[in-house]
Length: 155
Image 1 (spheres, rainbow, N blue to C red):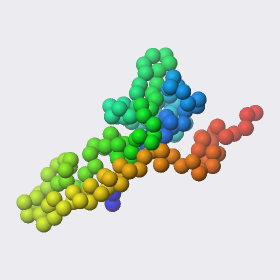
Image 2: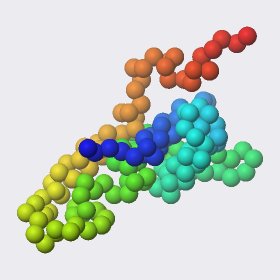
Image 3: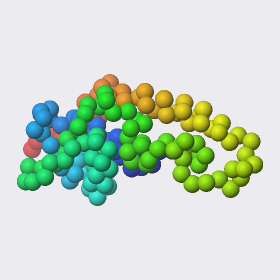
Image 4: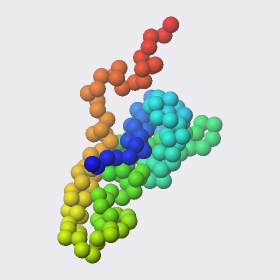
């Protein structure tokens, strides 16, 4: 079974949350504790994800009392493949595809050596064609897109 890591899943959640900051201005930043509180992802995990996303130039950080993180580029310019690569490294189904890590014990006898590249390339192209803007589903009712505590009426 192919499965994305939890960190990659959390990275998508964090990036989409950064895009949903209100008001949407260039000087608006969000902190890792703030993102954690809104998304439900533990703060140390959010901090780890943001560090990896900053290293991949998807987010930028600002230090100081008014510090935090913001998107470096829009969700329409960030593909699912970009996020996977930033968090987990190159997309490689097996150890023997381009960008794969590790070695195979039966590499010298393998009847399909080099043929996984075709499958791997197709998956990379597919994931590269899906942007985070595509993942951000506008058809979900607003009440389900905000944290439950924010939907409670003020007393």
